[in-house]
Length: 83
Image 1 (cartoon, rainbow, N blue to C red):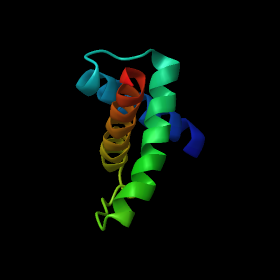
Image 2 (cartoon, rainbow, N blue to C red; image 1 turned 135 degrees about the horizontal axis):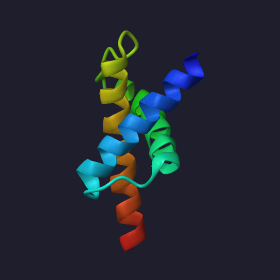
Image 3 (cartoon, rainbow, N blue to C red; image 1 turned 180 degrees about the vertical axis):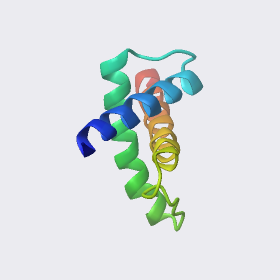
Image 4 (spheres, helix red, strand yellow; image 1 turned 90 degrees about the horizontal axis):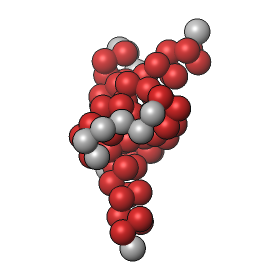
């Protein structure tokens, strides 16, 4: 059940990040990948900076957490593609 929730959260977070950064999503599979990788980035980055979002308790918190990480990931990808 946890895997299904992670896939749904990843898809929503990736879609939201795609809307924020590029103006559109990248497709369901890429949204899931970007959202899950974004969640991993946020899980390492925010505690290292002393910013902890209590995302473990709720789905909405998890989506916000993963979306912020996915936006960071998409911005890094955009910078790399421009170089």
